Amino acid sequence: MRFVKLSLAILLLVAFAAIKSPVSAQGGKGLTIGFSQVGSESAWRTAFTNATKAEAEARGINLLFSDGQQKQENQIAALRSFIAQGVDAIILAPVVETGWDEVLQEAKDNEIPVVIVDRNVSADPSLYVTRVSSDFVHEGRLAAAWLVQATAGKCNIVELQGTVGSSAALDRQKGFNEVIALFSEMKIVLSQSGDFTRTGGKEVMESFLKSMDPKEICAVWAHNDDMLIGAIQAMKEAGIDPGQDIKTISVDAIPDIFKAMMDGDANATVELSPNMGGPAFDAVVAYLAGETLPKWIPVAGGIYFPDTAAEEYAKRSK
Ligand code: GZL
Image 1 (cartoon, helix red, strand yellow):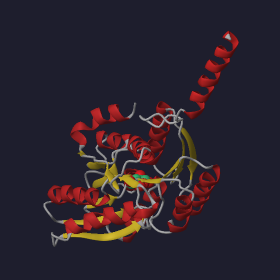
Image 2: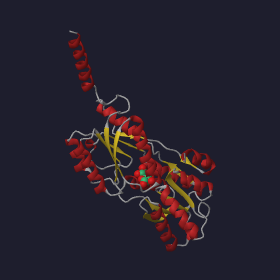
Image 3: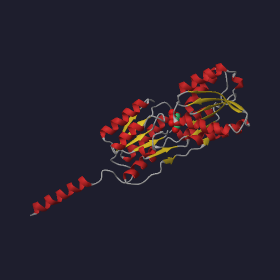
């Protein structure tokens, strides 16, 4: 009889273990999530990747990571691989806005929820659960508002655009242009894409400095800090004092921009938080628990100047 009771107890234990949900209600422990990242084009992008990986590790999430190397075809292939592996969810940081409908439909057909992070997609919102991101239009408006007051509303601006077709570039440009349109002597005199990279920013700024008298340029507006850091190099090589002869405004608030401010080479940066992994994982867990989510989960950021650069550099370089 004792043997029967022991077998029954073991049977019950095995049965309980089998039916117990593999996902903890909190942070997603036990989930397998595919993360398709744009690439590693900027310091902010790398910080975003590292923060997301660390967050997954802390939560016990099995994160399948794919670096798209800034090519949409690589990201689409990664999503198809995640679908074939039967992941619990997909996090997509899209390089450009268009061209996602087909693969997002495939994920939906396979009942795999997709959370968009950072840049936007033009696909039907029914094809993804939600989007976690900052407000790029606001970032552009904030950058322009600072430049207007820093130049008393009179400035010839050269613009280093981000990746062509990306919502970050399109919307930052939209917000910036909305504000300067209110000031007749705030003009964008040259504009070209540096693809969000330091090399791109340097090369485009070099061409700007050759195509017009640098003394006619009042400021450089860069859609991210990495392009501005490249532009600072180009200005120095041309004998120009960046941050003094030509004012600078950019976005991301990466450690190196605070170093540039400490060196007197940069004037202002609009912050973009790299910590979007946590809110994205929370959205996945909530969705899998049956919750209805808003289509946009905002991530906020401030604007920073040289007066706090040393402490921000110390804080963000850890
Ligand atoms: C914006 C993000 C941009 C960063 C760049 O949210 O997509 O992409 O500003 C990065 O640094 O390349």
